[in-house]
Image (cartoon, rainbow over all chains, first blue to last red; front, top):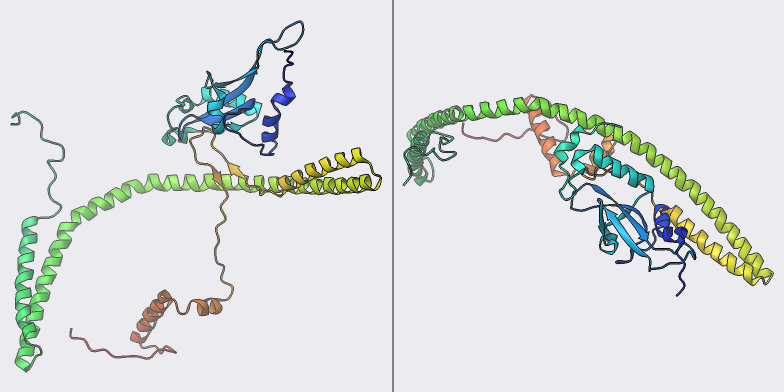
Length: 127
Length: 245
């Protein structure tokens, strides 16, 4: 069966609409590609999540050799995006990149499965 | 059986907050005086001057014991009061510093949130104007398509009208300026509107609250103090009450 890869504009349409404030519908178990953040525990630090499509494309015909699948990269781990989907808040790509850097700068953000200890936040200085 | 060298359990060296023996002695004295008072109350009223004089002496004696026991109470409480005051004084400075820090930080944040809210309101206003313009254009295009029996144009105009309605709905949403947490741990801050009363007409405000028990209490206190000073208070009269003292 001939299958064309889904265009990027279509893949990221939901994310674009969400960032534009259009409040597109969220359906459980039906994730959309884009950049997000979530907490892995109550009171925990922000964790960057990217949902992207993985596909194998024939170099000659440009057609899909396998079905496309979405995968979530959360805290450096590959996860099932359908399980995380309803906990995600869409953010821009720039904010996602900043969040990845922020985790290296702020030690209290490294423990993603523990609540952020507010007694350590007093050392936060303007940047 | 505990070993002879085992350390004592935590909290063992904590004496009771007051001297229990003195307190028992005070209680015994109070009960004795209550017994004697019972004998006085068995007389339903004082019949003779001698009884009245004896009652005077009994009251003087009871007052003296009350004064002694109260002095004992104050003496026993003093070390605790001193310790409590010392703790309050010791923590006053760090808490004062933190209060100033938080007040200034909240001022800084408030200023930012007000500017941000103005910016968002301005954007919302511009979006609303644009949405109204697009909606008007869509309605005009639809009317033209209907008049010209242009089905393709009509379909396009209807799609544009739907998009315009969506834009109008988005532009009508309430905007709120928020300051989120950088790490995820801090609570989101936003502007809160607190209402305060600014009194323009004190007499009218007083008339509104004149039946409030708190206002009546205050007036009673002020009037009683003024009358005792010999002043004349309009709306109040001096009433004499007799009490034995």
